[in-house]
Image (cartoon, rainbow, N blue to C red; front, side, top):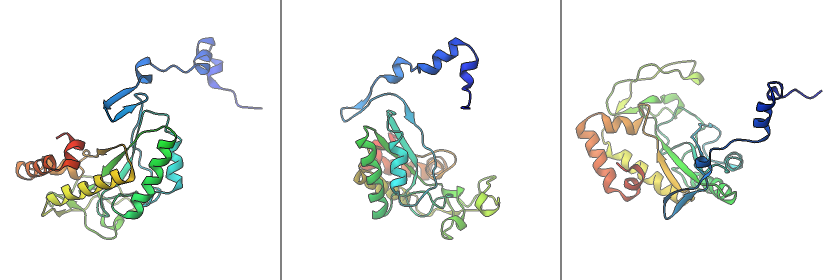
Length: 229
């Protein structure tokens, strides 16, 4: 006997909802960013960390293509360099193989009528050396974040990071990742700059460092348009 749909047992009003999805008119209407980009609707798929493979495969192509009916897909966090992750199988955009892998994903999504942005990611001091080939966690200063619970490491917390000597290194790292995202065919880029991760800490840690990074980012054509700083 097939399972009973719970909506069918609560009255005719709810059974009508089951048969006829309700989408607000504004959500279903197109949205133009500029002359080069128009979304078919205003529904956005937010980033969801997948932890499937450092180099995207047909699995990621299928996953994102299945969701291409939304107006915009924002990918999972994509690493801008090997250092800066707490997910051992999170994908990156710093090798030729990764660029090619993402090109396959983008082509598949676009073939289904979708639009997709790459979310660029660096976790900074919220990482652990054991999850990134023993490379140290990095932060604007040698101050550990509070808490942390690395499940794959038995629940250990955050470590004291190595202080960043040259913050402009990360402007260059993100610039290269933005160039690679363009090469892979992405429609745009989102910078992950929250939750005490690298960009947020660099922007906020001090006027000297934060001002330096903001100034350099404004001067770089690949970052200035993306960040709108």
